[in-house]
Image 1 (cartoon, one colour):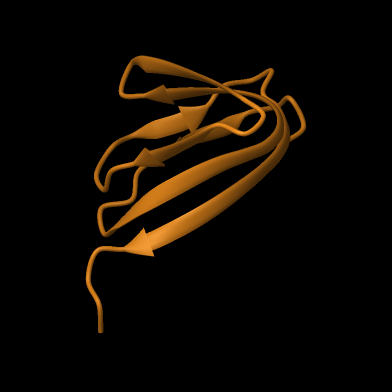
Image 2 (spheres, rainbow, N blue to C red):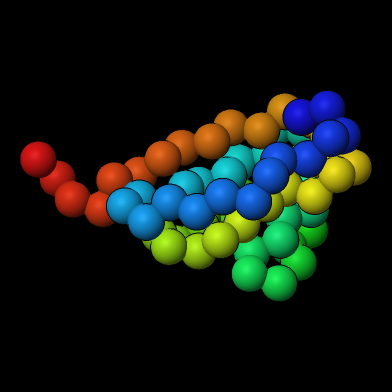
Length: 70
C-alpha cells in the first residue's frame, strides 16, 4: 500500500481476509473504523461495503474466500 488508500468496494459472494504483514492500515467498514498494525488480521463478511483510508501503508495480504464449495 502506498498511502493513497483504496476506493470503496463490496463483494456479495465472498468474504475477504486482510492480513497486515507490515505497516499501518485504517479500514472503514460501513462507517466503522478499524485500525490495524503489523501482524493484525481482519475478515470482512460478504456484502459489507469497505475501503482502505488514505495514509495506510505497508504490505497487505488479501485472501478472497468463496462462500460455497464446488
